[in-house]
Length: 343
Ligand code: ADP
Ligand code: TRP
Image (cartoon, rainbow, N blue to C red; front, side, top):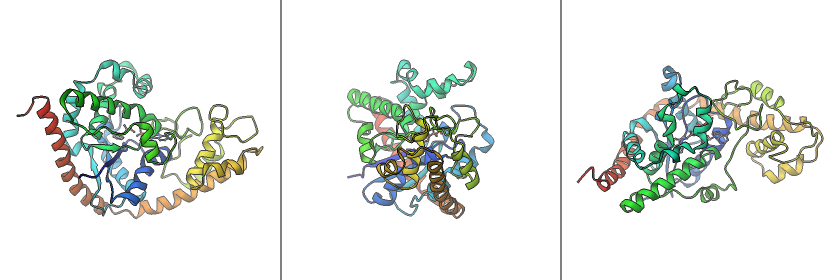
């Protein structure tokens, strides 16, 4: 029997930040390094997703290659036969299945997507593309073509994952068993050993999630930031005036974010971090510890990044993209037959 598939995609729009790294990338890297014998691992660059909002098209190619390098520097074992890297647009079945799924998707369903509301709210009417609107359908196609069961993503993508389950079930009940339905979000968290989705907050405004699309970049730590830049951003992170460290997402979102970051980058249990810092009356020592942990982590990561071989990436892309076309086309054909497009 085919192995269960773990799949995720990271867009190549800007440098990846620590939120992308911890929320989207690290869970799949852990699986690829520890469990690639039991699962198929698909880590891809959703390049067709890159211009749902306006971008500089001249830098897209560099961005795509840079993302692939980050995957490798983070520890993705390219030499494993069940680990695959690919660019979405090199597997045309993604676009074809999207069109088909589009025709079974309701306008209302898409209009309810929080990310659409957030992102379209920042654009003038004539710049809101239809692509931004139906982007969750493309994401569903990305997942369903390979029969992925587990899809590590940050909390902001949970709604899209739920939609993927809905559309898969809708077509399965109408046309017979076409798709593997990805596991429910809760089960996904359990699988990746978390109790909830991860949402790293912006350092300057901890009520918002850290995001690539942030204009100033002041509250965002990029994976390629220098130690000085990291220290500066952490030391000036917005906290509060309560003058007591406590883990409280509502009342002290800034401090809570710092405690989370220390646990994640210091590879410590959150409980241990809380025990050490909660109750302290100054935020300085916590900030210094967070900065130290991130600087140490990023320095190692950046050294690995500088050693990544582009040749190894290009070779792997070639093999993976051939194999993924085969897998994706097999699913697409099944769907085409079911809906009457093929004999
Ligand atoms: P961004 O919102 O920064 O443009 P993407 O939408 O490309 O990032 O997200 C890539 C991956 O990173 C997704 O799995 C997403 O859920 C995750 N992610 C993005 N921001 C965060 C965050 N602040 N905390 C945790 N995960 C995040
Ligand atoms: N939509 C995701 C994001 O913006 C990226 C993505 C595209 C993705 N296709 C996917 C993630 C399939 C997981 C699975 O972050």
